[in-house]
Length: 149
Image 1: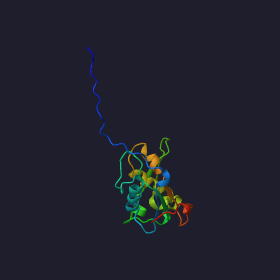
Image 2: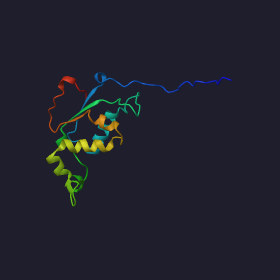
Image 3: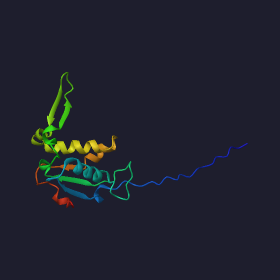
Image 4: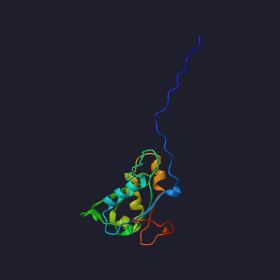
């Protein structure tokens, strides 16, 4: 007696990854913008959630160039009251700094860390964050890519 094997057809739709050369470059100016609201827009653009072709496990986002990171705003008294914590890894190594100190020291890192906190907690987010380019001033070296606003 011979066994019958039945093959099931897959109903999953397979979509290819978007090549990097077809992605758009977006320029976001943070001058006088609130940090959280700007970071949500950046995270949305990086993931590609604004597109109709969004798929959660694929990178469909755009390259994002952020300028004027040093001119970011906070609402209320958060510039002095909001405290950021980090740990060195040694005993008693808890370090704290205010938002004003972080902007004075490294405004690019403040924007990067804020957007990083809004990304999904998986390996795709490391790949997505490579498409974020943050600059403290008005100048950026990506003029050849012709970023749109």
